[in-house]
Image (cartoon, rainbow, N blue to C red; front, side, top):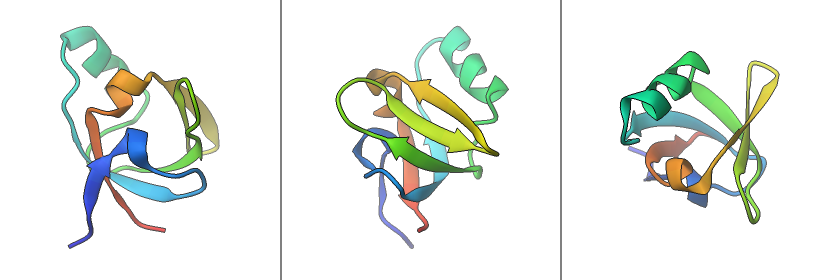
Length: 78
């Protein structure tokens, strides 16, 4: 089993699999689901400096606030 960490701690360039989403509130949770960020999906971290975490899924980039990114648990795949 791979180590599970918050998305906010993943270095740029790494590919991760989403394990769980613990975002509070129906609206923010629904928004992440609409973007295709569901448990089991794979994303690549593009940028993780100050400010939002930028990820890429299926060639599309999204910015996720650090608060939400810290509540998305992932495992590093590559």
